[in-house]
Length: 178
Image 1 (cartoon, rainbow, N blue to C red):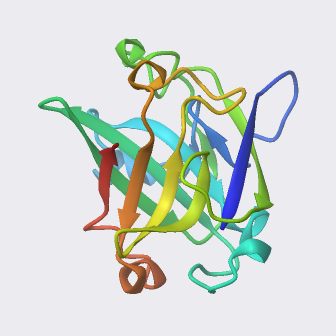
Image 2: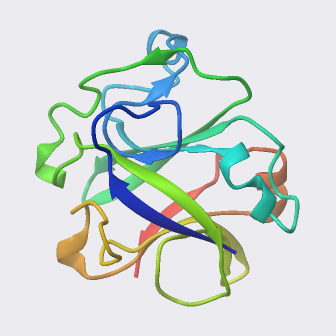
């Protein structure tokens, strides 16, 4: 399992690294071709090479980025997860403009990864829950986490079938809070 710590991004930093919120660095054509739409807000980008050494089950490729966008419809979050196998080329400023009702989604939070043992709470990648692979477990009460979902005092999960994850097929990914 891969643990996550975050820190509010300060000063000069590489916008092409793993992060929660702020401005995504992604393929520009995703905006034009409808891959990402106006209802999506940027949740996080995960640079696989930053945590691949902790992927003991070999679920992900050696490089590339996983992007998690969420839309909020009828009181629930719908994930739009994308994979890019190359270095992204465009920083999209003000991507989350208009989503301030969800908390501070404009501030960027840098992500660091570490190997960890299984536990129910905390923010982490690639764990298991009820037979599904948890791509991302987001605990808003972890130290230094963004305020997103903090008022729920519950943990958010983004799950995907293990075989679909290996194929980088996120079409049936689910987002839930418990």
